[in-house]
Length: 120
Image (tube, helix red, strand yellow):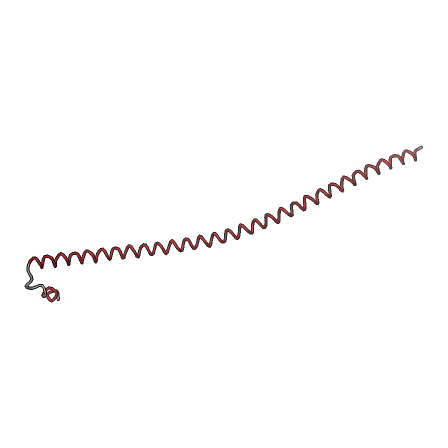
């Protein structure tokens, strides 16, 4: 079949044949370049898709971490409030212990006075 493809060139001048050969060479060269660029494009598109997936994954992870951080901050606030309440309750109880200790000392003194009066 190649003879049929070449048949149309019969009778052309050597200069025209040379020019046809140059043009065919350029066509082949351009086809190879186009294939290379197509391959590069496909490679870049694949890399882009991979990068998009990575970005999406990182966005999702970031959202999860933000929710977890918010939850931990709320837990910290809750624990801080509980600590303050416990601290306040402790101060109240220490105050009550001090008052009762004072009352106990006062009662002891009263008992000692009464024991001394009884001895007399």
